[in-house]
Image (cartoon, rainbow, N blue to C red; front, side, top):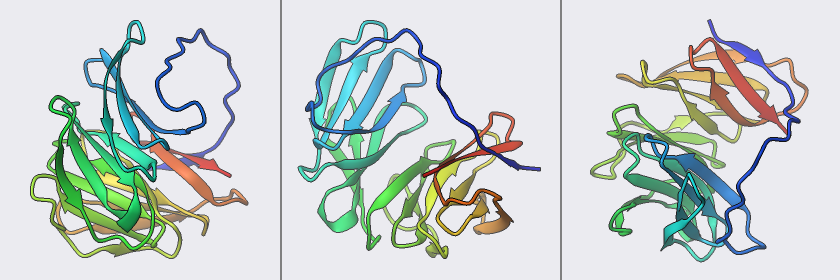
Length: 214
């Protein structure tokens, strides 16, 4: 059973400040590599930057779309970064070692705001303001299934590694759980929060879904 919870975070912790992105840009994606040794960030300045997690040293960058990056996700092996942004609403997959483009995912008709890899890294789920979720082959870049339509802007989050599934939330106050192992299936439950959701994430044991409203 998945329960919906909400709350606030207001704790100040020790911090290491990393500088490299344009000072006026917004960092819209940040993730640790699986070994915890590197951090990858993506920002509205259109750059993906790689950092040493221990000392904040800049380890290199990838120049992405000049229009800026809206969202980013790392593959489970930490070797690839998928970003959304730029004209045409395409998502671009980069190799973090060679810093070269691998493929593009083309099909959405509005901004893509969430990106999710399957636990094995073979599939990608994208959520968009065009009110669809799309499932892609992460190697060939082609669609794996029909787009999954939702009544509200779709923002997706991956379930824990034991199951290939996702949750999507939007401005209609409905949480949707998607099973993606075979043919996509969904289950709905309504939130009591008065505002629509901007983000969501699962707890490690998969028994809670955390939603951030705005």
